[in-house]
Image 1 (cartoon, rainbow, N blue to C red):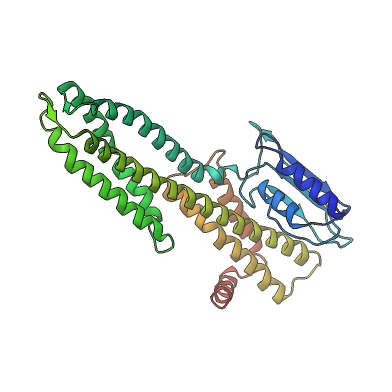
Image 2: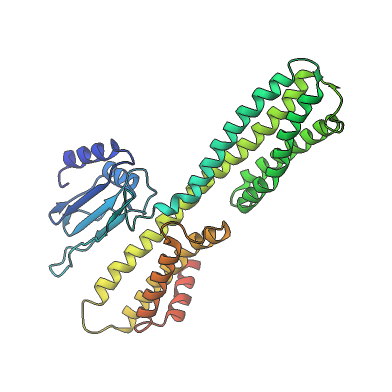
Length: 336
């Protein structure tokens, strides 16, 4: 990867792979990057860290189409005493263990919600269009329409719960789309409820109006779910990226600090501040997983991560004052 053409060639190869491939890269020779290669590595779950040009240990295991920072990636400095870049993993059901594929579950569920909503809309609108093919809704047709309306009523709470989770000042578009969805729901309710009061008799309708109320409902519902899907993707990607960068920084710091037999006060503070950053960066993902009921993302990634973080914190507490370092970290963050 030292020469520019080699970097572009590798980037082209990586970008040609789909998520059925497992990408492994190792080197202890001359390594260099350009933006094309960094972007290709990010696409495979890498951090996109430009380590510069030099000879240093590097190991990487990833899968195309992962979020940034979710692959297994290890690199150290160019020092003669730098350790080997080791990655120990095993493949289970086609996935190297340790790759954070579970962190994409939330966005995957959001994507699935949109796909299911569109499929449901297509099925319902076929029947609604048939019902509205003339100006009379028969008793039999009313029972079909009511089954669809009952489903719409039952899903309202779930849609609003999803939207309200993201309905903050950070995502102003959600408030607008949620309001549009609620208005469309209310208008459909006001229109369809009188028609469904008596299921044993026929009712007269205006065909275009009948179809339009259902169309507007599904259009606004899907627009809201699509926005939630995009937000979930971006949020998870940013959170994972920030956490991955913090973990890498902490790993490099541990390697540097413990390379000697003594730890100075300044080393202790810096090490503790890096640990504090990892703890803070992990909170959004753990909080989101908890709030959405993802108590154990397969295979138990949430629990395993928390256990590993607690063990690391316990071990490093022998060398640092974490409460003090957390204060230092927060003060630095406020003034950055």
